[in-house]
Length: 65
Image (cartoon, rainbow, N blue to C red; front, side, top):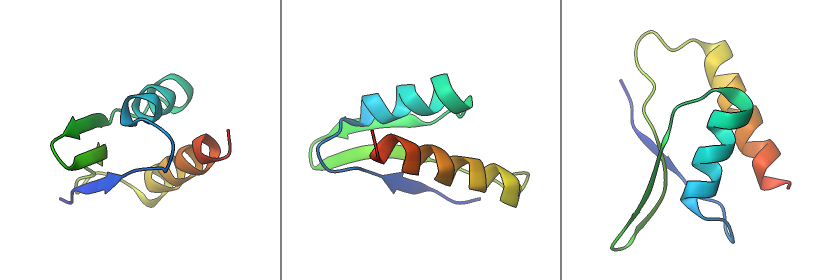
């Protein structure tokens, strides 16, 4: 199990969250609370390297929009 938080300068967490789900069918959680702003990603023991590659592809794609 792991927890990560991803943010992209100039973009809202909700935008990345929606993009990852719409384009890649990846469920993440957009968080904007006090000084925390990003998308929470929680892979687990069943998450494969291929799954993580899709996540990285989606984040890179969104960052380049």
